[in-house]
Length: 110
Image 1: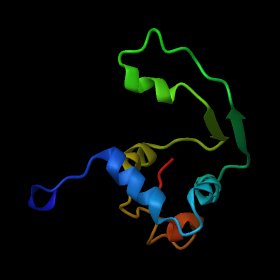
Image 2 (image 1 turned 60 degrees about the horizontal axis):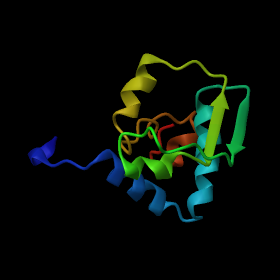
Image 3 (image 1 turned 90 degrees about the vertical axis):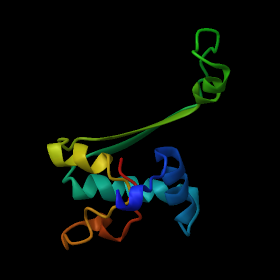
């Protein structure tokens, strides 16, 4: 890290989401682009409005994470490089690869 600077993962994700010009729903397009770049032949979205109980959570703030939820699936194989890229959010791992749809994205690794 240059000069010892760092940014929390949650702050970085929030910044990426806020940079989308079309609003937060354009992230769905990014998820489809990521699946396309991974050579997936199937992309599925599943939305659940279910809310789960909060009595057994480690802390009260975790209650807001108990639903609703969006699950996004694609049938591509996750590679070792994909795992590396997850730890480098926003660092444009696709920018030099002209065959990737997501090279124009903002770095939302999914």
